[in-house]
Amino acid sequence: MTGRSLLAGALLVLFLPSVVPAQEQAGHGAAQHGDEHRNKNAVGLFLGASTHLDTDDTGFTAGADYERVIVYPWGVGLIVDFASSRIERDLVVAVPLYFHPIRWLRLSAAPGLEVAGHSEEGHEAEVEKELLLRVGAEGEIELATDLGLAAAFKVDWAGHRWTLVYGLGLVVAF
Image 1 (spheres, rainbow, N blue to C red):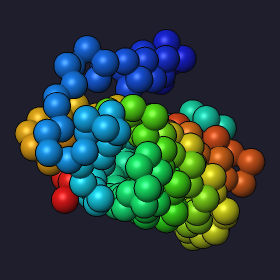
Image 2: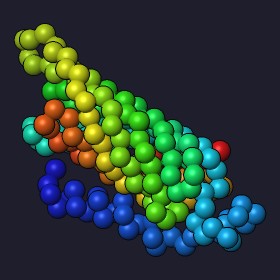
Image 3: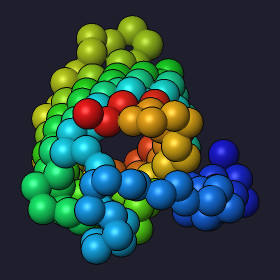
């Protein structure tokens, strides 16, 4: 993956939703609070890729997350991701703090744990557990009431290694 395509993906996450007109949130206090969140809970399913920058290895990533808005624009949640590449299998569990600076954008910082299984040809798999810090941004396009499509770009730091995580998610709010 080239730096040019990573930059294009990051720009897509941040600016694509801005061309979609915002819809009014009638009846939920939006008039007095601007971009107030309609729902307190959201569940998302994620499909994408993870690129380990130290080995330039990219693999498939699938995951799920949950968010509970405590006081808009702040929320907390849980992230569980599984990433699989040719040299590594990772399970990430993190507890994010979410911030919604505008209705369609969600920023996050999430401390967590990464369990990585490294496999090399002819050797038994080695398992490592490392503390992880994930920061990310997601831009959401509303498909229907309480249903959205989110483009996500995240950066993980674990064990002095950097990993880029990017893809699309389906978000259901309730």
